[in-house]
Image 1 (cartoon, one colour):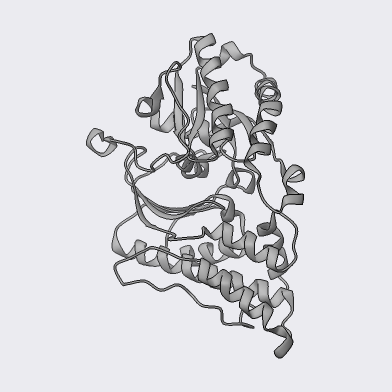
Image 2: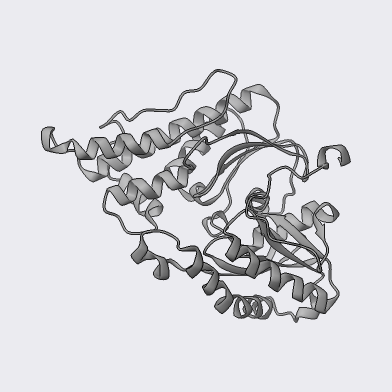
Length: 342
C-alpha cells in the first residue's frame, strides 16, 4: 500500500511516500529556520505563508523521487492536529483536494501518533504491543502506553514547558542561535554534567508527570548570579542542565516500565535525536534487557513519512471524509472509542 503523507503542523513543510508503513520511498522536508531565526522563535503567520509557498513543490518532489505519479498513490495521509492552526489548515486543505480529485482514501492523523510510528520507518520489523513510548519534542513531553495502533494512553506529561522548549529557552539564555536545542547538545559534550546541581522535578510516587519550567528558571538565576560567584563555563552549564532533564525523563521511563509489562520502549520526537538521551536510553536498555527503538535523526524531527506510517497502521480508524475533515490545533491524544474497537 502506497501512502502519500503530508506534514505541516508547525514550521517544517514535508511530503513523503511510504510503502506498507515502513519502506520510505521518498521523504522531502524543508525547514524554515532562516525565516524565524531573527525572531528567536517560530512566528505562526510566517510559518503558514511558507507552507503555502512550498507544499505543492514538496508533494511533486516526493512523488518524483519515489518514481511514481499521483495516480499510483493508494491513499493520502495528513496531519490534522495538534499544531499551529494556520499551518495545519494549509496541509489539510491540500490533502483534501488531492484525495477528492484522485478519488483516494483520506486519513487524518494525530501528529503525536506519527512520532510513535516513526520508530518503524526503514525497519523490517512491525510493532509488537504493548509499547512504552517516551515522546519528547519542542511542544510535547509524554510517557505513553500503546496497547494497539489505536489504543493509546498518556501515563504522564509535562505540566508546563516541554523538554524541547526548555532546551530552546536555556540555549537562548546561553546566547545560542535558534533553534537552540541541537546547539546546546553539542555544547554539553565538552562540559561537566556534575558542575552544577540543578533541580530535578519530583512527584508523588504514583504520578509520572513532569515539569521543566523550574529548571529553566534555575539556569537563569544561576547565570544572573555569576558576578558574585566563580564563573562556570557555558559548556558546564549546558551539560548540567542536560543532565537534569535526562534524569527526569529516565526516572519516568524506569517507573513506567516497572509498573507494567511492555514489549519494547520507543523514544521519539525531536529531542530523541539528542546524543546524551540516546546514550542513556541505550545503556538502560542493555542493563534491563529491554528493547529500545529510536528513529534515525531525520525521522525524529517533524516529517511526512511518519504521518504516512501512522495512517497505514491505524487504517480505517483514522479514515476521514475529504469534504469535511478539519484541522484541530488542540486535537486530543486518545482516539475516541478506540479502546472499545480493539
